Length: 105
Image (cartoon, rainbow, N blue to C red; front, side):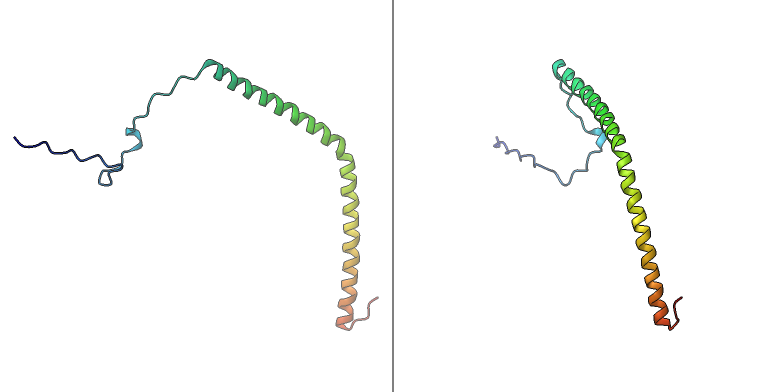
């Protein structure tokens, strides 16, 4: 009788094999999640939603209190910017008149 041939070990990855389509892959059954963990997840989710709702309302009220002061600052900056732009435009026109040899009014 002939001696038994040693089996060749299966390689980690067989490159000659065609890749399996994703729908042929057999996944194991999902594990059952403890009811305590499920209840904790839902509790944390609801707590987060309630916290987000109350925090949003708090920040809206805070911003509404600060808005008049912010609006006044923005208006003041707008007027300062417009005045500086007007002055800058006049200075540039005087320089242009001087360069062109025209006597400014």
